[in-house]
Length: 141
Image 1 (cartoon, rainbow, N blue to C red):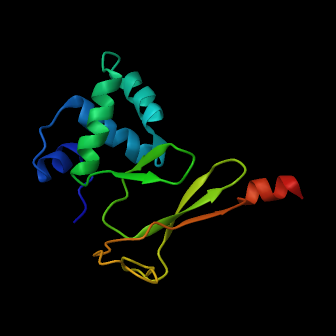
Image 2: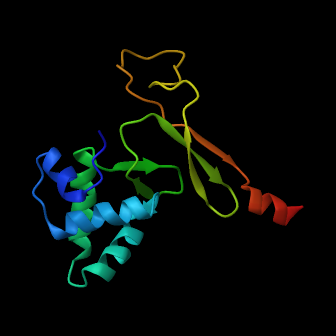
């Protein structure tokens, strides 16, 4: 069962229910692949007195608890998404930066195996496909 209510989500992982945590969950759910500054700006609209540090602390705690997923697709900026618990990857437009979730072709993690694991117990592989989205491709043609 997937919990969609932020209060239920927080309680399910033993985190204290706070308005900033609820707001962060809602913002990331509504704006997948948002950066921390984007999440902060959106949370600030709902909770004008919330500090940037509080939002960043929430992102860290929620990611650590498994309610959010922190992704790094390059460019030096982490992004956050609420799609957790599955093995999916991302398409990134090299022109406009659009990011799209795509399901893993193999369905189970890790979907790729390195030629040598150096003794690591590999849990997952991050795959990022890069290319032009349909709109950018059409604009170039």
